[in-house]
Image 1 (cartoon, rainbow, N blue to C red):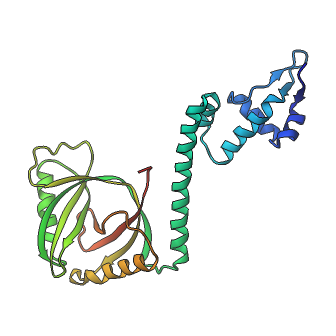
Image 2 (cartoon, one colour):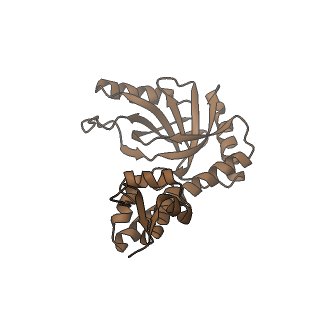
Image 3 (cartoon, helix red, strand yellow):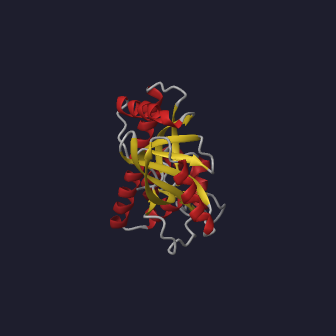
Amino acid sequence: MRDLMNIQVFSEKTGIPKSTLRFYEEKALLVPIRNKENGYRLYTDAQVELAKLIASLRLINVPLKEVQQYVASAESERQNMRRKWMETIRRQLDLLNLQLKFLDSNPNEEIFLMEKETERILWFSAEERQGRFAKFFKLGREELEKHGVKISHSYLKHVSGRQNVRAMIGFGIANHHDVSEISFFEVEEQLSKSLCVATYFRGNFTAIEDAYQSLIKYIVLNNYAPAGPIMEMYQGEQLDAVTIFMPVMKLGGE
């Protein structure tokens, strides 16, 4: 007859608390035999390795449903799941390293980290002297409002030039809007969710280049790897203050 262990002995052998073993049973991950006479839980030697595997997966924050799937899967599927978890952990490490780099850089209050959510953006091109693009934002906004399209943010992305600047003017809109009949815009883009290094500027927009230079200097000195272009982001209709940001890490598994 195979050796059976009560929950106390099994807990001592595996190093897993009894409360955790009861939880595994509740979730059908590790089901003991029940003593017919007294209903006590009894575990087998064959369950020791399984218990340790489940505990290890939970310690590295594998979701419970995925642990259940892993335990029930063949080896080929388990390999695929392990690859997925490894990629997730690598992304988490990249994020932690970036956060440590930010803290280690001793940034002043003008530089900050910002999480930029994914956003649908419509773009059109414009050319004007630096800091004088307000009229183009107004034109784009009026065009969208004519068609009942609500705007979340406005954007400016430099293409070329310093004094006379070629730029793309963009507007963030909801995904449900149908803009197929609007010919004013040249490009539609789905902006990826990103972690960004950013700065805030308010004042004379003919001097906005100073804010750009400060942000770029910080990025270069601290060896951030750009994950997208520098952009200006405006809230609502407010055009006298801007967040200037550069993505330095894609988020959301991209």
